[in-house]
Image 1 (cartoon, helix red, strand yellow):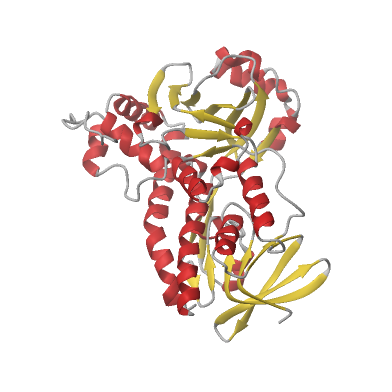
Image 2: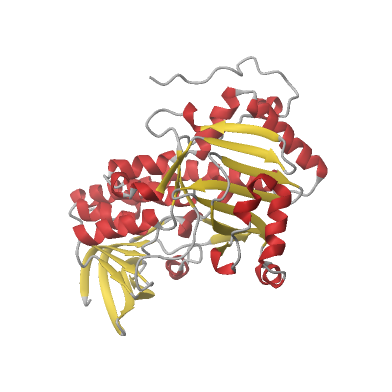
Length: 421
């Protein structure tokens, strides 16, 4: 081996970079390999949910994010296309201090994590490193081969972590069976100059139509617009004004803001997919984040779950260091603890795709009916909110809850929600 480390992490995304920092603080000899030449840039929308806030706060990172890049939002209003309000979700129901969502400037969370990691563990993060293959000793993983500055480097490790996204090359090299589902709908993301007053988030649903609008810091506005997967080039042929006109028809109150979209460079395309790896742990390797369990953005938990992975796996690796036991059985507890919440969120997101994205009038009617029931039922609203916020591992609705949410049975417990001191 050219280099020997305790842990090698492939990918410095939402989970990989955070795991690297956590391990470095635990005195683990870690190296994180990132194919990109530097920290991420460009447009991406990001909402930091309460569970993500809690992890960053615990690590002292939340306070290091520039305040002028953060916009706290308490209320999310769901509306039918055409304007009628269906439901308002109030993050104020959650326990303080994480009782709001944080709308973030593009990449600011990731840039903060990477900056702190580089400053606290110089040399542990290697940009421009292309993963080539896994190194094995029999059935056990013993390291990786990567190309760094044009040279092939063999890096030995007690553990290799694949944090390299939904099309993970680490997962492929490990021959881990997985299901990759690409949805029929994706999203166009835009960041516009706010010309109209927008204090709270608005989310419009209609016949195969979703338009999400979120206030951001610096009088900016994020727009998330559902489009058929692969339809971006066709949409561009129609010009930006055609898109602006669609948005104005959905939410005319924000017409002036929409008019600030004049160039496709103000937008980004966000593909959607779901990954289900059969197992996350093998002898000498672990998969985290989208490499193990990518999910639809309806869950609003993709990045958050990668961060939770990093937090829990970091604690598990610390135990491996103390006991000098790096076996799959020693690491399996990480997967056992994490799978229930991930599976629940993936299923919840798929249910939302089924109802929210639908053009079927019966499904749309049921969707709107459930929204309106939840609006007047704090108990059900709280249960859904705690799932979106990443604060629960069990499904938000039992079968009885589903019947009550559809308005088929009264709910005598509708006003019963936890009281937080």
